[in-house]
Length: 174
Image 1 (cartoon, rainbow, N blue to C red):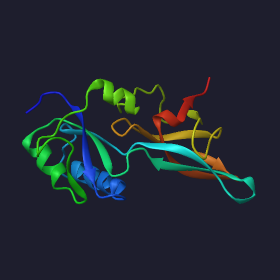
Image 2 (cartoon, rainbow, N blue to C red; image 1 turned 180 degrees about the vertical axis):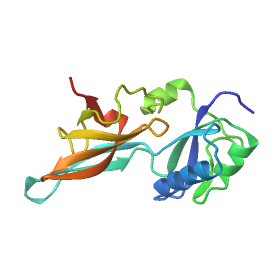
Image 3 (cartoon, rainbow, N blue to C red; image 1 turned 90 degrees about the vertical axis):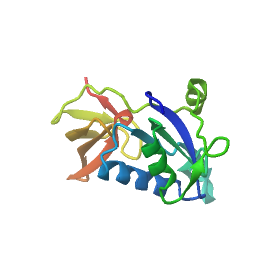
């Protein structure tokens, strides 16, 4: 149907967004569909909640509850697999015809394409720049370019702890 991957929006049962994402990722891996379905995202944003005693707590909230964003090549196979994933109620669009998001819509939603390049190697020490481990140094053990993640060891309380970090959570040390 299309020769270029585009972003599509899938409607899910409310609260099932992460389950749908996990189920789709598992199906993609099991059926080796990495060329058809390139990325699955549940956009999240940080919100600061003020608890009793004035304590601030940062929580992640879904930007679009009930929706999952998928970057895929639209073929009969990819449509069928996504449409029949448990928790998916359908593609967003008129009738059963999925409509891809425009580039402007993708930009305004803050969707970051996964194809980020990273200039680090296994064994190199990087600095964590976001998340609960901010400012900790981490020694890279494994790099997964497809998922844009690294596995690293962080020294916490005198003990090496394995962690998984996104490429955008780390910076190269000078």
